[in-house]
Each structure stands twice: as C-alpha cells, then as structure tokens.
Amino acid sequence: MNWTLEVVVVPVSDVDRAKTFYSERLGFHLDHDMRFGEQVRIVQLTPPGSGCSIVLGYGAVPRMPPGSLKGLQLVVPDIHKAHAQLVERGVDVSEVRVLGENPTPTPDPLDNVGFVFFSDPDGNEWTVQQISSRG
Image (cartoon, rainbow, N blue to C red; front, top):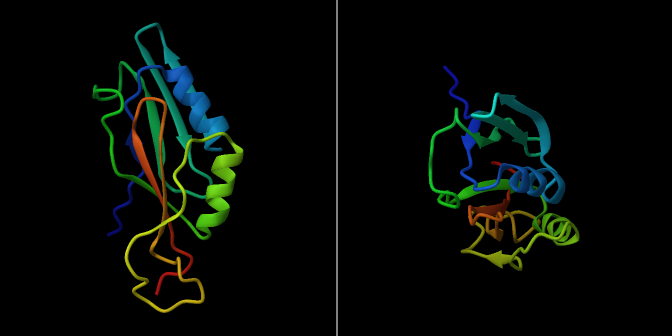
C-alpha cells in the first residue's frame, strides 16, 4: 500500500499576504481559494512538480500559531538555479550551504548536501535541498 503526503497546513496571520508570497514569490500554483461565508477560507497551493500541496486559511484548518512550522523541505535538481530563482523573485534566501559530504559519488558535489534556507512572511521556515539523482 502506498501512503502519500498530500497536504501540509501552513499557519499564517494574513492569508492574502501569504497567498501572494507563495504564488508570486515562490511560484507555487494556486489550486484554489475558497470561501464559505466570512468564517472559513481555504487556499491551496502546490509547488511546481510536487505531489504535495500547502493549505493556508482559517475556520476549517487546524489553529496553530503563525510562523510555528519549521523544517518544511523542498527538493530541486539544481540548488544554484533554485537560489538564483528565489533571489530574482525577491525572496530573502541564504547563500548555498554545504552540509556534510555527498554520501554517493555523483558528478555534482552538491548533490544531497547543497541547501538554501528561507522563511515566509510569518516566519515559517523552509529548506531547499539539491537531489538530482536518487540511487
């Protein structure tokens, strides 16, 4: 049986500001923005190429303090291109960092160990890791 992670709730203080950040700055696809009266709003966005989405909102999503989500991780095949894209889109992102040694010899020494880090406007922390091949 396959178990797939489909949605992660990201706690934010301002849904419109977060929607703009994730869609315009990060390039996540806006899947839907639904309102059910004044009490419920659900915004779902998906990173390019991902099978897992994030959900922002209020009323029908778990209540967590804005900015309390840490350790979200995206994977890209080229960390330098990802870094350049984030900088170009105005995201305050760290420089590329190497964490450890590449466990499997590959043509790219950053494979598996190249990372960048950024936070959304509420302080939810994201990591981007380069994995261009999976043994």
